[in-house]
Picture 1 (spheres, rainbow, N blue to C red):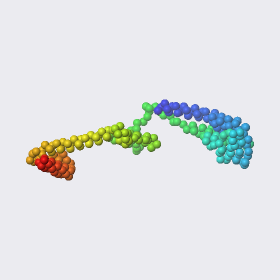
Picture 2 (picture 1 turned 180 degrees about the vertical axis):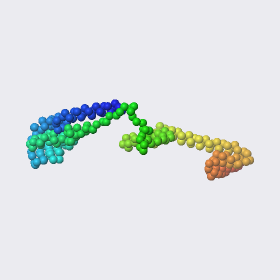
Picture 3 (picture 1 turned 180 degrees about the horizontal axis):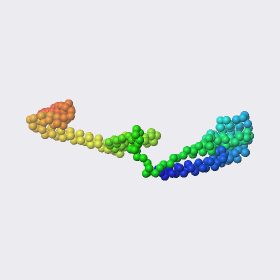
Picture 4 (picture 1 turned 60 degrees about the horizontal axis):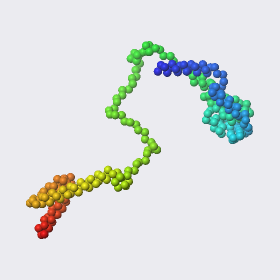
Length: 255
């Protein structure tokens, strides 16, 4: 911090001395550009419309210059703040100085005013007063107490709609259709296979238990234990199996 302060002090002192030496209206860099514009303006033809508006004709194009508004149709005067070659050509017949019509920021007076302030010296660190040694009645302002919130801080992600990439369309490697992956088809096949396996196990158990006297109770117990989450389906499955096995026994008996 002290190095930065010493550097700024040196810069201010050098620029103050430099500004006091200049005797021109504008700073040297702006003066060089204005002299270049005046040199280019000598080959232009100027037609005077009135006291403030002029028509400047060149080999490339024709430009309109307004001295009062400080505007040229080439727009360089408005953009850069310095009279362009067309404005310098329009000022020559009236004998006006192009340096006067430059923006205030390019003038030596503005430069001197910018660096007129001083950077106050700071005593050695050993002579600094402690904050707690304030005068009586003087209020000491301390920084606010902050507490870090729990958890990991959230990352700020910049989301721009124009930079979003289009969503990728998934194609199945099993059926070659769009919208789903091969993993979902495999899981669906597994679920169907598992359902058929459970159904075949139920049928096998029912045929085994049908040779006992209380086989219908066993069927009900198996249905209720397997479909305990849905009591209605367990009753339907029980009656279907009961009457199916009853019909099977009658067929075997009559046959």
